[in-house]
Length: 416
Image 1 (cartoon, rainbow, N blue to C red):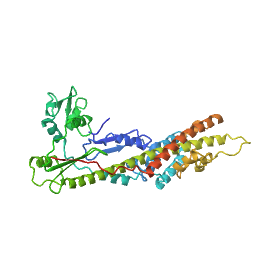
Image 2 (cartoon, one colour):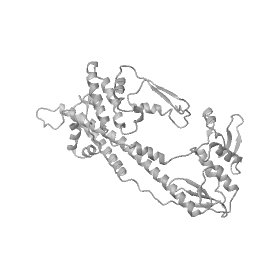
Image 3 (cartoon, rainbow, N blue to C red):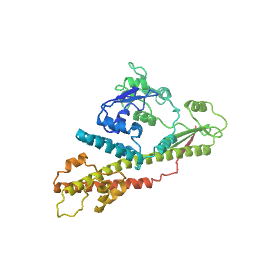
């Protein structure tokens, strides 16, 4: 559901994983949202396990503001904690709840997780600052429907206001440049706005403008890293900010021709700023992927430790004491004795507080399995660990050695 036309969201039957709630919120907090403020209310059933967990931890975190940050791996475990508590008898639940809450609080306070730096991410987003578009949707409509190059493709729709019939590729397509019209007829008309593949096709079908060496406007373009255009005018070139400025410059040329070299320097500088900002965001995305893979690795470590604990509890009197007997961090770090890939995975993913739980649903499923079944399961986990360690190591290397981008900008210059 796309709910960007709504201003209030009420969540009930709250999921155990806070990130699920954030996905719900994402349906209303999205492009096209018309309200300056969106109100979100979350309802819990009183005296339930999830109510207790959320209430006990609400002083530590702003649940729905940190689900993509450095607390994500911890929050991802809340659903598992709730599930474990739900399976316990009521007489044991309260004591276990206190232990689980204490563990979560400790980990939240320590924040011992490799994480995205959200401050840096916000700064990177600021670097890609976007002012009001110099060409509005109304400008687009006027240009396409009056230009000699495209006007013949459009005719007014006979039934739907603010829309047109577009003749394109042997088809007649109902289209609109109006967001309101598209909202009213989403299944009928196609929205010609930025990001629309159809708009891109139309733009690329228009031939390059004729150039005149005596013109006042300098147009530069580069598609080395991304498609970019720059418009400059004046003896000491300055960027043209609006479509109106561009039209005025072209209609009323001056005697002071612009300096192409200066315009090019300005254009290259802006291109470099955008490239650097884009590279920062790419790095942040790599960090997010690394973080998600690290959470998977931690769960693998816990599962392997639980399998070994189950094997240890089935140890015969004459067997060597090689398996862990307690649900502790040492049960996880002890996996290193197997060498690769467990030594690598512990090195890449272990953090303080990561330990198996006796009431883990995975352990409850396997603790009564035969030794042969447990050993086969450990072998399967070892294969998964080998693949996970390889991915995790590659991701960490990519983070430490970011891709070097070509810094030279190829620019084509036109005098109009």
